[in-house]
Image (tube, rainbow, N blue to C red; front, side):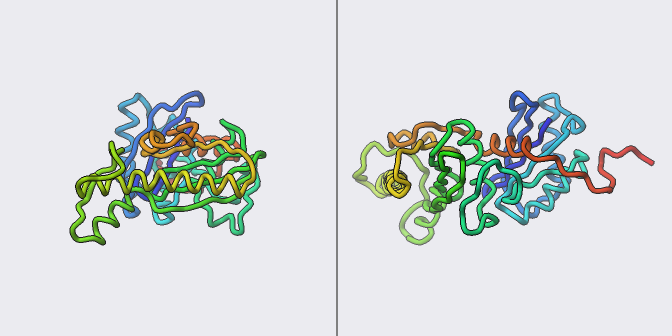
Amino acid sequence: MLLVIDAGNTNVVFAVHDGEAWRGVWRIRTDAQRTSDEYAVWLLSLLDRVGLKADMVSAAVIGTVVPAALYHLRRLCREWFAIEPLVARASLDWGFAIKVDNPDEVGADRLVNALAAHHRFGGPLIVVDFGTATTFDVVDRDGAYLGGVIAPGINLSIEALHHAAARLPRIGIGRPQAVIGRATVPAMQSGIYWGYIGLIEGLVGRIKGEFGGPMKVIATGGLAPLFTEGTLLIEHIEPDLTLDGLRMLAERNPAPTLPKEKSRLSEPE
């Protein structure tokens, strides 16, 4: 079985795939100081709840946009699963060209989203990911990654509005019934929600215009369903796009060799 680890700025997602389906998907808050042992206590108990054991995992892949978290996640795989994880980076075999000025700067999440979206829907397409940042990634007809747009995420915008303006409260995100808010909170909700709909529609329109042809639009991330309600531009919602992309990347590339050091699964001397 394959252990997939997607380390984002807000959460680290762990998932196990048995070759046919996901056996479990779990999230924990991102903390770059969390040790491999802390991860193990939490993850092994969750695996046990679905009838899985550490020695049933034969391969692992890590995608992270938090470099400081990689050390402990790699040690988790080595010490508790006795495997060396494949780490998503631009130098791997992606099956497509990365046509940007510096491929090493592109976040692993954006590349794996492009890989999974093109595999599922073909191209050309735009992937909108509602994460800590809201990203728009552009994929050519043949799957080549062409770059994209990075904008502040919805929750970041809400926090910035609250902290920068003393009299504005912290609000939850939701689709307001009217654009014109008749009180402070509805006005803020309208600005966030319909402002982001305008951002989505404006950027998608400009990307299509610059590309010069029709493009499919795919959305992923926790807030994708909410914002898809407000626009007709998004054609498909794929909540597991990043996990699927990491799984496909692991299938394309040979598994690394575990260093010669003792793991927690090693036989006692």
